[in-house]
Image 1 (cartoon, rainbow, N blue to C red):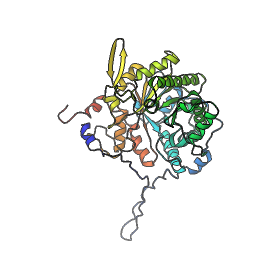
Image 2: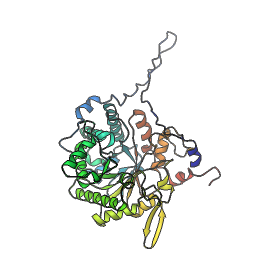
Image 3: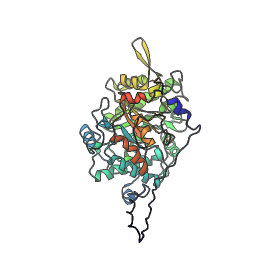
Image 4: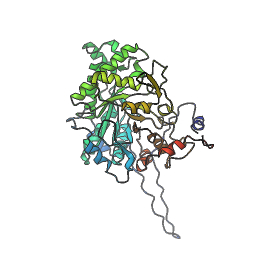
Length: 441
């Protein structure tokens, strides 16, 4: 069934531009018949909605920083805000007593300008106010630091409306060398300054875009906390480290760098700067074992964390893309797991469960490619095509699956995508039925 679907996909990437504008129609009156009721007023586009509030709040740097972190009590409170949200929309992660939504807000796509600032500002507010999403994902390099700053503006807006910091689980990422769109500072200017000050060397920078040196991580964490205006992040990811560095440096040197990055995270956790850490990835956990310049096992990452943090280490989360055209995480047993003298071949979710590592998935719509691609078999019972794909991704029958990230910055996308939080997760039997052909195989 999925094979038939894949044959319908375009051979090249298609990025779909969906307008959020809706049109009103004026109904004329006649002497011969009563006037018809006026059509409902269209919602204000996100490009202009709450514009004055945004300008009042948004800043390249927030002071004072908001204290606190996501807590068991706060996230539980959030999970009960909207009685229309399905009860199974919230899950408890391994090793953290929290209630986290099956859908999270992703902030990757967009231009570094005020129009996309406003679209994200309003999209994230509407998403949180739905009562169905309390996981927020960003990164310092997303939209040249502007995505983090919009998250900071949204948090301050929501606190004014009665929400608390403790209700929301906020994640960011580090590794890429980022420009600063608001201040007009290039990433190269930053790294050149750090080289001149002896904090890093040119060798520490890989592919002119990535750095894992602890001094660089220190600088970036402080910038992220300033950008969002927080005293503490709930989750800090090492961002695409395998994909960017391993193909270009010796494997042993890479593992040493990753180990030092984990050690940095453990130290910052002890100092109250972060609550947990992990790896946000694109390919390394989905690659075949023999692809040694891109593959990494989850078990190896956990073992590195154990060396620097002991058995009670805080490497708790991984992130990777999963959708109908990127099914490797559940469909391929490419992850090795050593159990005594045995070497098992299992899929990502199976190894994550053994390792008690939470999986957060991204790109359920393949960055827009699947937005209008109707699944070949409808077991999802959703109104929009996009919601069907999101329901597919968040319903993967895997214990380690926690949250699926979705980016949404128009009225229509928010309304369509968040239908899923009002519905139960698809039962395991129905999800498996999706893959069965008409012959039942």
